[in-house]
Length: 300
Image (cartoon, rainbow, N blue to C red):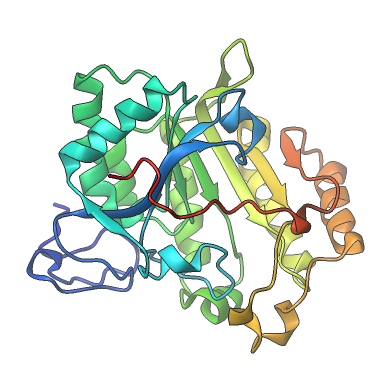
């Protein structure tokens, strides 16, 4: 049984006693939930943001903490204020009342027990919009099974298909195996995409891949794996907004933006193998900011 007394919520299986203050790889401990923002967000995929914006909840800490993380200030648990499960359920209701298309849970894995309880409370209070589990893909089957019936949309990264890449950038050599198993469970729970009349997803699975500079072959292999396994029942989001930050200066091979030629080759591969349900970024999105201010808006 999953618990905070011996945390096995993600594939790292740290086994720490979070209730007594021990901290695992994710960087968080205790019974409370730490986050930095809960507000309408318009920079998710079009079928997630819709017209009104996703009701995005940014949690602190992360079970991956990739070296190139754009949200490193909160993924490293450097930013965050505590709320209770009861308060989190109210935050969900407040976002719905603001017109949010859904509740978009960003980096939720290490709080999945808290979130499950908060979602049940929110549903009792009248929450009736879809719930998006917006994760890094490094999930355990036990945690996903625990969430069954509470999550309508899985918006998951598929970062790496090579163990050596996963080890180098995320200290998770088992990531490729874990993400494949997790994706299989996600699609078991939500096998087909369902949209409302406005084109906003209500149920389904979306796989994101952020193309890294110099890693086009790996990106193509990921697209091929997802398409060969799930066809067009799984949507793909093929992203080019990678932006090198100071924390990747020692990783020279990714200390630059993705070139237009690299992204074009990546996208052409997806088209060539028959991918139809994909979100493709056009223009110089690497110059745009997809990162909101972590100023605790809505998180009080």
